[in-house]
Length: 407
Image 1: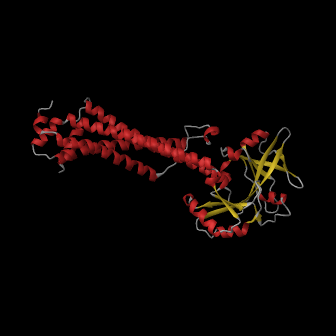
Image 2: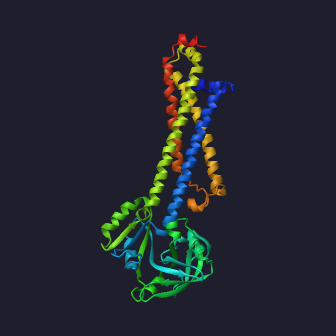
Image 3: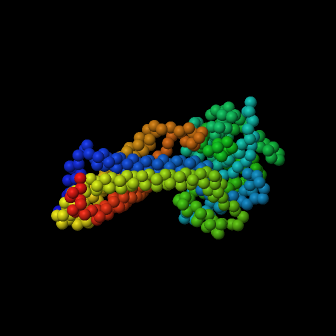
């Protein structure tokens, strides 16, 4: 029989609920529970927030954008051969999918309003567009086989400024030589929540841009190619491979460089949360150290008797170690229950809303990451056990003769 564990259980079961030690013990359990719960919820919300923002960016710009080098500062660049580039890109194992695109500046004129926009032409020939996830009302673009679609998607901001709704028609003026006019129908309205996109872009059929640029643009030409990788973490490595193996006249833009401010902001949030979590762990472990110190002081007489009966310092130290272990496990179980319960309620019922104008989303996001949950529990468990061990070394300084007289 493990004597240290047996005595620890007796102390735990026989503690007076009205004693000072019992109150401090409850505080220690609550401290660990709340600390772990706050850490789990913080990481779930942080990762959810990061994923939501990144998915919105990726839905519009993908991981990489490939276009031709051009000396002008215009958004409209020289075209590239789409089918040949797609075939070359899919030779790279890191590439998941590709989407051709082309852009053209335009002026939208309605009865009462005029607004400058960028028409971005897309195609779903190689798979469904990730922009579908941003549609909030109406229908996505149709892509008939024979002719270019006259449908366009407006952002909610552009639609509000122009006072357009789903089904309305508007004239698009394209400043070129010679100038051209097209009438498009609003098939749907999207919202990414990111001003960089919503204030500027209108989504349409890439074949409309080819026709506007005709006869210079046959069906094989595109303005550029958006590339989605299998793993976003390989972005830098894949970019270097593209530079080494793709033709020298192609320009490769990483999404992290195009929208550096957004990604820097997300990194800053991540650092702030880590600092916050370190402080929480410190407070929780400090409370555990104080709790074990109080237990030792209250049980000084018992420690003296056990030493007089032949118990070693290590045996008594293990007794308080098991006591601290019991408190830690209880606190962690309660903390996990609180955190997972809160996350589940928010994930399924969305009880905490957000203002999309300020937070880019309409509710607090939750991301389930089992690896992070295990890591936080291991870190809390390790820090708590270390906090338990530190005060137990005070036991070696307690003398049996003095301790037995201790009142």
